Length: 254
Ligand code: SF4
Image 1 (cartoon, protein in one colour):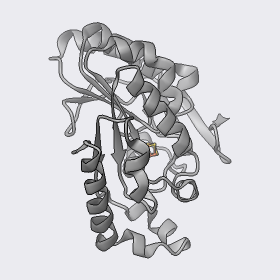
Image 2 (image 1 turned 60 degrees about the vertical axis):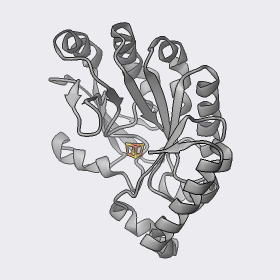
Image 3 (image 1 turned 180 degrees about the horizontal axis):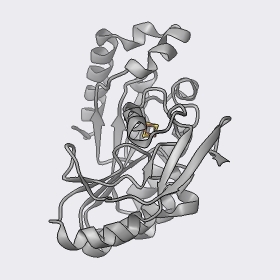
């Protein structure tokens, strides 16, 4: 049992043996989740449905099962599965604080780079910079940062245990400079997202904007009087302004 990087509440950590690691995905061909659970515990996180597969009763963000055999499994699975795009990760942050100790994501990326499989890493943590040596090796590797706002005060309301936006932007810039394809995932669209084009310019190759299911974070919107920022009107107006701004600086939106 230990505490997360910024967590005020203790996180229950369990080392487990997974049965498989390279799973089929609806988003890309495969997805790898070296951890079940996420120390970042974002209020809007859709991945909290994973709780029911783990038997954990703790709130989302307060437990993590560590799949300590993930690299061993992957080594085997890449030998008999057809190569295809691998998403790292779908229902956890592959660079949540525990990755600094376990290095499971790093080891999995090493295996995928050796085999030259295309990889899409998605994170909120600058810890990904630790693995820039491997990311540069993979010919078709790309790294995306989830960034939903430019306003740190808003970030703290919705995702208090995540690295700051400033750190994420700096990390994106470093990766981009190192020649790695980068993108920003803007979802959900939180207040303060309006200014993202300015700070992402020159740091990403493309952006993804999505209207996520906000329902898990309803209480945050209510508690801080932000209900008008959860409406269709807010989403479409902000998305439209952002689209114009991104096109002006030559960025494609997916
Ligand atoms: S970082 Fe991603 S996976 Fe982790 S809690 Fe936040 S939204 Fe969920």
